[in-house]
Amino acid sequence: MKTAFECIPCFVRQAFEAVEMSVGNGPQREPLMRRLLHEITEADWSVMPVTVAQRMQRTVREVTGVADPYRTLKNLMNRTALDLLPALTEAMRQQPDPQEAVVRLAVAGNLLDAGSKNRLEPHELEEHLKTIWDLPLAGSPADLFAAAQEAERILYLADNAGEIVFDRLLIEALPSGKTTVAVRGTPVINDATLEDADIAGIGEVATVITNGSDVPGTLLEECSYAFRQQFDQADLIISKGQGNYETLSESTRNIFFLLTVKCPVIGHDIGAPVGTMVCNRGKFAK
Amino acid sequence: MKTAFECIPCFVRQAFEAVEMSVGNGPQREPLMRRLLHEITEADWSVMPVTVAQRMQRTVREVTGVADPYRTLKNLMNRTALDLLPALTEAMRQQPDPQEAVVRLAVAGNLLDAGSKNRLEPHELEEHLKTIWDLPLAGSPADLFAAAQEAERILYLADNAGEIVFDRLLIEALPSGKTTVAVRGTPVINDATLEDADIAGIGEVATVITNGSDVPGTLLEECSYAFRQQFDQADLIISKGQGNYETLSESTRNIFFLLTVKCPVIGHDIGAPVGTMVCNRGKFAK
Image (cartoon, rainbow over all chains, first blue to last red; front, side, top):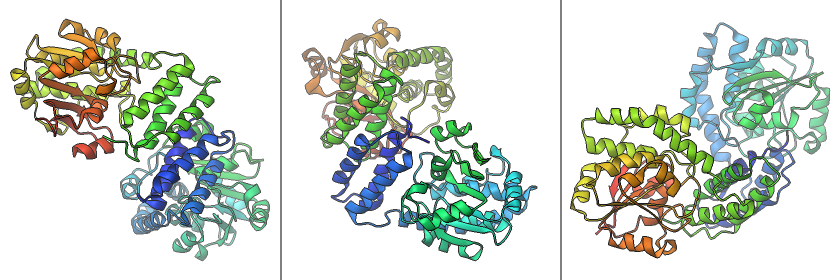
């Protein structure tokens, strides 16, 4: 997916938030914001949105010396998700279709996203989670589980901190011993890294690796050789979130996209309005 | 009021909308957006927000040759307001306090604002208008009417198209023969001009003048001599909307600010949360 014109104000919003996260209202705020605005102004707007975001987040880390500006927010997201987990697990067990229920929960976690516009703040999550059993859901959780049954190696591409706590439930529901979970190689926005996988206890239910990259998505050419090997060898890929969707939507691999549509540009590409929960097989999957 | 750091993403959103309004998705879109981003990047961020907006809107008019990019939207806003007027007038008459009711309606019209973030689209207005009788209201409509009774010359500073249709009801409720209504001298964003005053029939209930300026607010040093004379001679000024508030909040004149708080920066300055209806005497009014 290429950057749409509508992405430009969103880049600026992301830049603004990254400045707030990294330097608060200190003296670096204005020069850093001007530098990021300049980068957006001069950027190639035909690349993928995550590439523009990657470069901005690099600038923020380099200029401020803050290696992980969203760490406090990510900790809050993880804690919020962990606090809600017992009640949600119980509510999930009350649902008539267990496969659909666990997919809905993993997809709902995707609303915990600092990078997108229509996201939920951690404190809004609890209220929203009551609605997730009835929201429109595109795609078929049963197809996902059938594909998982057939697969020998499943690669699960995590998206954000907080969300990854709910991912664990879905990973546990997949056939055991098949799944490798990949997180980002370097902190970028609020995307999950090894630290978040650890907090969510993913290592107890799957193999955890990083993709070796600081893109808030999965740009294969920027990922480590080790990750690309895993990607090539997997016979099912489960891709969480908008960033992974943006970068892999044209993949011909056997891939399922699980996300909540949070922006109209992605919604247009998927063919579903903002707010839709998605569990779609890739359009170009062979 | 000076520009706050939070205004920067809002400038970009305004720029984006102005580009859409003036050139749609034509070939001018990207270079115009880059030029506006560059202007924001290089702007003095210590001026008033309306000054940054004024310069951007000038650029849009100059580069595109479109003298009034928001004309279609303004026509829609006027038409929507006129369509709703009979039912609202009836609902207003059912309210126990007629002064408060007419102020509430004029203030609610202020949500029809293309320049601010928390605005209503024309189609959302009808639903919202049902709630306006019960929303929190800061300030005292009775004080406003008492001041109007005492005043000899009232200057009413209009804000937006659409909104000005509701302003007419409040202007009619003021003591007759005292009121001059000022609109912008040049089209800027969706601010009301003579054309909108004419559509709203303001000339039937008051004298209509322009302020001679293309600022989306009232920067006296940019207004015409004729307007400044009116401003100086008025013994009561009624200022509608955020743009007029931004530019006149420190005025020591006998001024009332009528607006809906649509942004946290202005809310912070006023001391009221986003969504509050305001009918406040100026803090520095002598």
